[in-house]
Length: 271
Image (tube, rainbow, N blue to C red; front, top):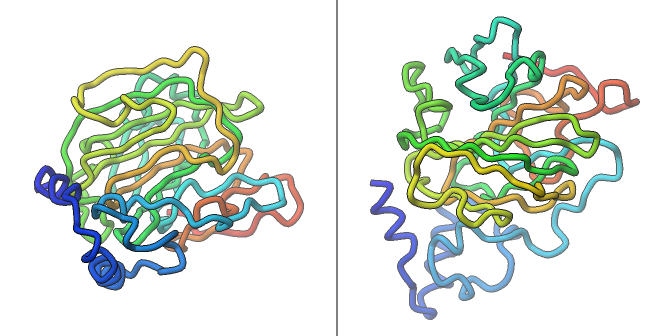
């Protein structure tokens, strides 16, 4: 099904049909017309429409110190990495080595694990949560089960059985963190401008090491999904979430505050 949807999404649409077709598709998906830059006739395929960039001038960076949301979507899980190395996300058990392969997982003790689900209506590019560099990327082949929280069963364990890419990163102070990008039903591809081979066929277990590591500024575009999926951010314990569970996230908006900073934190409801 995913292969067929990928083929269909790349079919060229005649220019005269694009405006009414994309207007209808956008209305069906619940896409905000203000978040579609340019003219609808400029999108030759469904994939081009679906992976559209942000309109110029949208989502200016906040003027206070914080980490930014890496994607539009909904915050569906907040957990902490515990010393036992086994913990629960959305009612499903995982071990830390499963979620953070090729890492010294003990350096992630007490880190936050924050999962953002992207629905089909959301903007599907993801951005750097802070000034950062990418040290290595781990590619894990797997299934393409749905990741919609309403459809996921406990036994599916999609965060370790689905196709996924894990980025091991550092912030500007050299603090390690990680970003996990999980494929899903109808989401066969991901792309990353800093490494055009990453997220493309063939999907085999491999590790990409970067020397020198690519550097990104806070809010800079990091990559994109093809259709909806999920992102997990492993954030240092010196930060604290600014959103409650099930709240909407907006890319480049404040997402994590510094625990010692004034007026940057407020209580959240954790899993």
